[in-house]
Image (cartoon, rainbow, N blue to C red; front, side, top):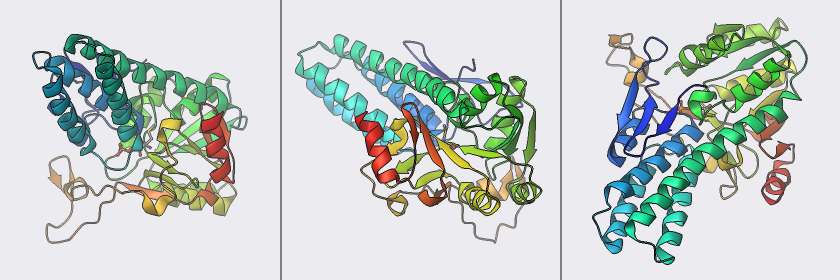
Length: 347
Ligand code: MRU
């Protein structure tokens, strides 16, 4: 199992995803500020992993503030929650995890716990968020593998794998579980411009697992589908609105349109922590804009003229009508999503 992120009582340790696959380097964060920076700079990325990192960062912050009184601790904790919330705007798992940590904090204060006891409660909550995410990924894998056709040639976009979660992955969890059942003949990994999560991370994870993997640029998905070489598409999500619209890595919408045009089933795999029933539709999901340098440079090499302006949204919205099903740890939601997503929460 890939060690995406680990709690070490006085530190949060993460594999540096910016350096993969060339180098396996671990970053050790000892303050919530360092964790927030790691999220912002993409040392760790992927919606569920960002949530886990924020929770662990908050637990670290409370642990380091043990010398404070409860009132002062509450002020510090609120500041640290705001710091985490300002790291990346689209992945709703971040806000979900912060809310969960806030609720645990308030309950511990209300119960009259000492500051040392509150720190322990926070640590346990962060570890629970991590462990539950891993369990959810395995459940999504088991459930999603059922809809993968036999001998499937599967296309995925970005990295929704072990690296993007506490482990195993959402979309890659489905692929892994299907591969374990012998249902996957090969995987096409979209390279995923400009940060190359597909070419660097998905291909790294799958080849480590021995799954036959072919890297393509996004622009090659169309001709591949036209040749009848893709049977199934599965991607992850950063936020799913109440009507089933999906925010995911830029390029997902194009893949979904291509899949529709070629009659290829397009599935999304995401835990309930990625579903945001408070947001009505995709138009209300905030889309992160990232630095121009991600597009103008490859490493330190400049590949575009400095005078050109750059549009670099990190995510796009795939309208719900292009999605065949949303695979969650509680089952597969089918259209109409306004009803089916709500039912999953109530189940
Ligand atoms: O910008 P990133 O790398 O954080 O974007 C990641 C994605 O878009 C993933 O597909 C999504 O978070 C799902 S991860 C299980």
